Image (cartoon, rainbow, N blue to C red; front, top):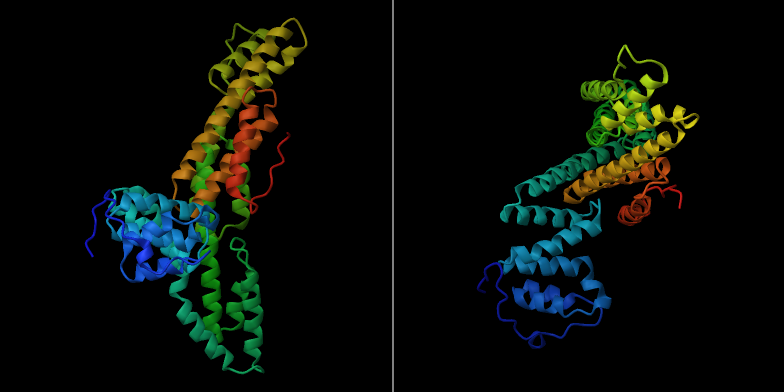
Length: 390
């Protein structure tokens, strides 16, 4: 069958010439695809009733594959990216196949950076699968060792610990278990395997959290970056300590720069100096510190002026924070790695929550609430519900 070039529609053949599609099934599409009738697959997909939801994931994937076979990669890409977005972080075989094909299409079309993100995510997803065969063989050997074996009882305890492992907090029982089973084959090697797998997962989780903290640092949200870094320090494996130390240094430098206040001229003193200092903070766009500096003037002759400056600082801070949230959202939407995308959306949501809580009188609060609804809809029920005031 001649392959059409990208952008060609080709002459649609009569789908009626084939077996008519059965109600609520994509079986005809499967048969057409297997027969190499790719244009008819596309025609059958386009003719599906909207109530059939486009034939589900498999129907959309078949249609995208048919478009690729026809040479219409640009037409297939929107279908594939929609499948990616709908699938979230799923790692079933179909989802992995969709992600791999999307990466191939992106690379073919010249979207190198987007393809790289997907390939990196796939490498992380496939890495555990490479050891599955070894895992099964090793455990068949363990089962053959006999129920009454004492080492088997110890290993069963370790396996239970590993199965409850949350992917972040490396259980000390796994490290201790390697020592308890030392010299007792095949259990010693299996205990080391459990520890290695858990350590790898904990490191990957820590890397993702470090990346998210760096985004917060770049966005200027130092308090949230500090909070998340403290949480990470408490659970990160020792192998991540150098990277954590580096980020700790960068965050400390940013905090020191943020809290440094300009010195008032020696000729000024008292309230005049304090007012000038607050104005200087305002000009440096350190709005929260400026608000704290203007607050004492709410009592006294400068009350009206202080109120105006606090309102202005609050408005500018809120606008800036919403802009940062929008930047994080845009970056997340451009990221094909599902885990990184999810974390970026969460960081954007947290900034909006902070904005609504700290600057309730801002003119952008209503827009922030609207943005928050969109974000929470994309995050889905797996994300914690917001506690934003309504």
